[in-house]
Length: 375
Image (cartoon, rainbow, N blue to C red):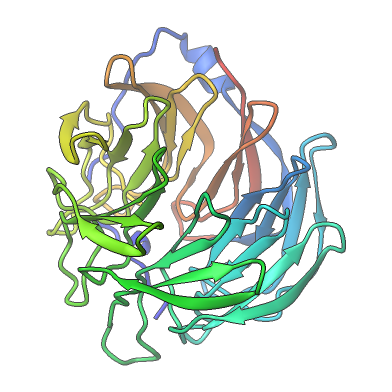
């Protein structure tokens, strides 16, 4: 089923903050930058090796028509160009840049809410999508993580179909670009969706939070070790959360922020995972409780978190910056439109591409913004 907690609503509006910049400068951080050919939300955005960005799939608006269309954004010209068409309409799929420059599009669900097992490869040179191997378990809302060995780890997700009760996948899978095949990996200790998966500097993958098959929001976390193909439990989150963010910091720690809790309420709290100790410690809180908001690590080591949804079901325009040196969040301006279910992509030039999503009145957006570097 492709209904999402991100559209159900459950909060508080944005609070004012300060980060030493004038309000005029803050307002200028986000600049309108053109439009997509197709309004969409729940899409994917992938930075390609040539610096362009592939936008693919999603749904086109209030009626939730699933999309197979794709576009490429060129930062040099500031324009979007329609590219090849996905062989299958997809929502809640993953998109992973492979070492060979192609993009693996895997799983998701179609416009009828049916989970998909097929996968496709996007070739930036030819501008085409072609089928590759098939997932062992059809799933959506899973994670995909490029490992240091070049394989892609797929974890969790919803493996139910149609109107059947939700069932969260616990079996991991590995995609090998050299063979184009998916093979079964170790099982998660807890099946989960709406979780995060973060590649650590030691090559392991931190799986954190999410929701189980009964809809319970999780505080449990696990580590995947590619060398042994094993998941092992690690420390527990201070706050159970789903649809949160997880960002690897330059110091090797992982920032976990926001999400919604077991009551369905947006949370503002944040915590840090230390791979050396396997423990989580509370960090500074965001200025605004939010979930479903993308996080973008910036070149200076800070983390940008923008948009998302609050407890009243409102999509947000506010943005915040996390400073690892102080452990604090500060206001970082406002987007020109409220957005949720959108994407942010750090470009090679240091700008952040903010693309599409849905605004406060639940209309899919074609508009695009650029956040300018401020430091």
